[in-house]
Length: 440
Image 1 (cartoon, rainbow, N blue to C red):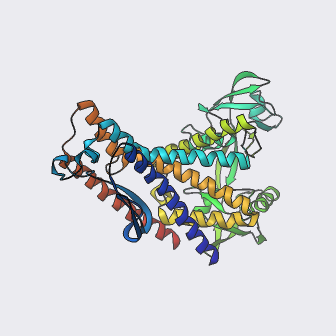
Image 2: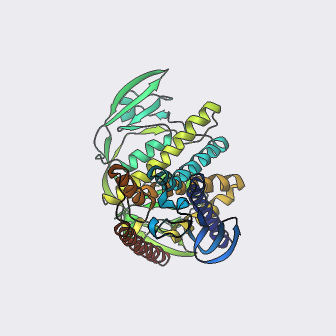
Image 3: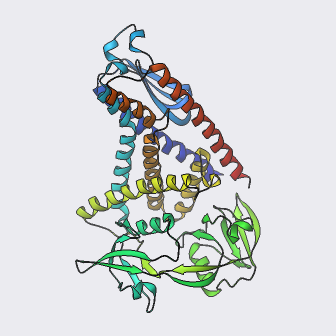
């Protein structure tokens, strides 16, 4: 119970920081452009606290799910204003208005980059080099050797080990297709092709972190054996066939000693503090592997390395958001896998719960990584050309810049209003989806 409360407090704190930076971007650029900022608020709904300094009201509102930077004349025709028309949002040049609107997402990107620098300094970076090459493996046949540095994998530029993982997860190629690889060895560049090796294998259909203190299912494959048996992403594996599992490493060791052979397996998982028994019948499938073992462990880097890998970590998070959106629109990710505010609160709580056992350093690092991802997500999402979002407003402003004439205010306002309604409907769906997950 205490950990759940801490998780909620941490979630509110993280949401507030994200919104604060976003709205501060709008605020500071508006001030620099000479625009009157009427109110700067964190949260939505009724005010809990407010103070007026100068011409601006600073407030905290009841619902910590958003915020606003209310500017004078932002939603009204300039002709209808009665005072200080020269300080209205609409009175400024189109490029100043573009700068004000774009500043919110830009500040989220700045925040993400600053966090990335802190993570690299404190935890190091996962350099993308080959750890091991088995004799006779597809990787060995392709000519790869230990310590080769991967620079391109399946068409994607690689800066860190996790870039390879992301590419493997988001690639549209078939598992059996050849993989183009570029790498460096002793300062020289090489190209090769890895032909995955196919073998029949029985699959449970889960992903987990082998170094986690609890064996939490980070992803349950859609229509996989685990999901068909009633398993869910987020389940914590407690035992397999009567053998107690205390960590990701213990589960890895158990599977290594007891290879999955198609026989029915009994999993006991913990879900919302309740134990659930699952009868899992592994799926027989043709499994293709490169047996390319690459580094994902962090190691300290120098000053130049900090600059390089901080930018790489920032890029990775932006790319992860973009690829996730792409997978949503192409149907590779179902709506059931999409989380809203409640789902994010749960993730933050689970991150704290699993990290606190390893010490405060890991709590800070893991929560910082999550905040980095959320900040990148907020920046990208707000730049999408969706009415009512910053990206939607930028579309109208760029149209104005090209036409040298603003779009009719009433028509633009109607489009943004309809966009706001659709966003609210989406929010309702996400809340429903999150609540439903709590009871399944």
